[in-house]
Length: 350
Image (cartoon, rainbow, N blue to C red; front, top):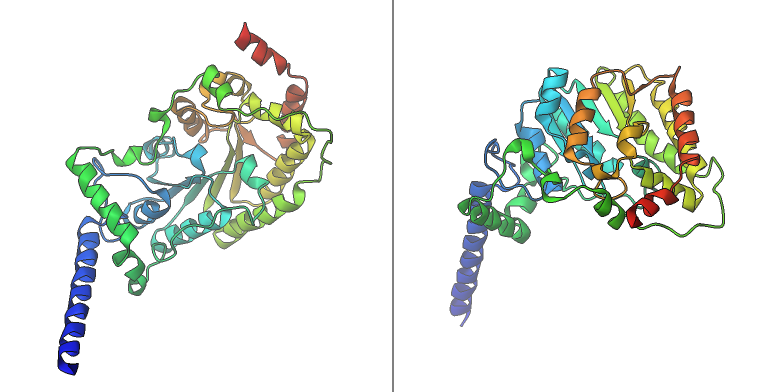
């Protein structure tokens, strides 16, 4: 009886070992997250930014890193290659948190000589509490330790994704590296859609004090300052995306306009105290933010706009300095405070 049980146990162990070995072999060969191979620049299956970006940061040849939330996803690295005479990799995470961006930046700097970081410092993430920010990057992918790969090799979810990649490649459903995680080709941009995607708040009964959001802003800025201090030889270009005029309608109705402008001024002043930091502000691009045909909702903008922004980031037209930032932001504040928001819907109904 004992001998039969021993044979059964050994057989079961052998079967499990074989299954695990097969799983690991499939993952290694397909390598859906590019942990061991370099992605095909012309035909890959892109589906999971938080996992596949680690492979891009490891495998690509670059000196510039573009980082940001979904608002940065519609940039093509080749635009920055051209306008900055550089080689660029994109690391964007939908609704990304500052801890996630820190992980990605640390990994990039560990594996490459990063000379420039271009970061979408969106107002929404500046005023989001640390507790609410996602922290979902798989740590075993964002390091150079080869001995902690078992969560990748022996993982049911990764195996499913590997089989998905095989199926999609067989069907020809691939995209070039330059289009990785770009979503503007799947979405229409128009005033009608922007309004449909915007949930207009009810008018609130209170107005936030100017300093109401500065505490959480400082918590997030503390992370960004760490980047600047730990990488003094790296140029950081922070940019404020061109949130549409609907965003300022939202701020007005929620009583947060003055608090948000206080955040923008404070963040700009804090960042410009560093010699290796620049701030580009597209919030003040009135022609863009008032043309709702550029938007899919109140903040997400079309690729044709991100292309113009990528070109402008290499120049000074939208550059904030210690000498001009207050005047530029004050002018925007005056504009949005006096804007006729109801006319947006009157035009739509008419």
